[in-house]
Length: 192
Length: 192
Image (cartoon, rainbow over the protein chains, first blue to last red):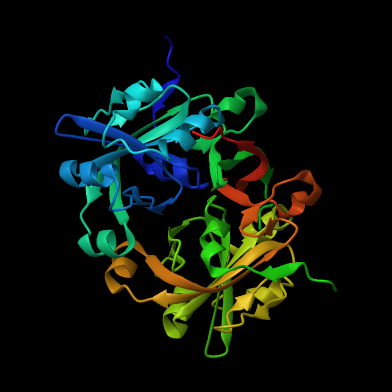
């Protein structure tokens, strides 16, 4: 199988989630692994690339992330909307969700986190920055991006391109209750 | 002028930014006011509704927010893409950007923050939760939403509706460099 994934320079990594897509958070520790959906994330710094993501303290993902000090962020394309909703609605504590949903994951190059390419527009591998107060009070996990890659058909040289030619890779944005907006067209603002 | 804005129940307020739209952050203190664009924000809690937004410590907005302990988040529709890019590219330290760009703001009902309705889909009035470490290390400002309202043509009873009938109110999502994706169509995921 030909992969269209190419490494993304770290100074461009924050751009991958700048538009606020719903993400798949992947994790692994002690021989277990998991994947969940997360609509609540944002970049917090371009260089070094840092992000924040809300991971509820009751989730199995949170347990794995605290054990490994790392997680992956995969950006599902529109073709994975059903899967994104499904992995966001079930727990992986009792069952490996990769196996259940037929998800193929590779190992991230720096931290070995599961990263998903098929059906995804991009992924980021992230090292947790321990911030016990923010984690406890707001379920907010800060992290530094240490590796990233994107499908070159939709993100190359630090820039997204959005077109109907790759509609299944358009990012999705959870409105609630399984309804996603898709980033399906663009507006170029006038230079101020 | 007829307004289509209606109050949003606080338990639905986080949904207004769940899909990751680019926002206008408004602020006021000591007789000055400002508006800037922010692509980096997220909800962190549904009840009480809490949010996080990155406001660079070098900005005039950050100065006003720290002085007043409050800010507004307005959700610009696609018709305001040029304006959003413009207020995100200039400082309000030397000039009132509301006057410069002809922006009309009302006073928020609880904290008196400037809230913009014309061209916006919704707004949230937020009380800063002081978190000096997160503010300093990540420019991340946590806040509680104390009032919210939305244009009932696009958000009602806690739910977004996206349609071409109100294309100018579709949310915009900054891809970088003045290019915005618009939330122009929806996918309803299968119930898991």
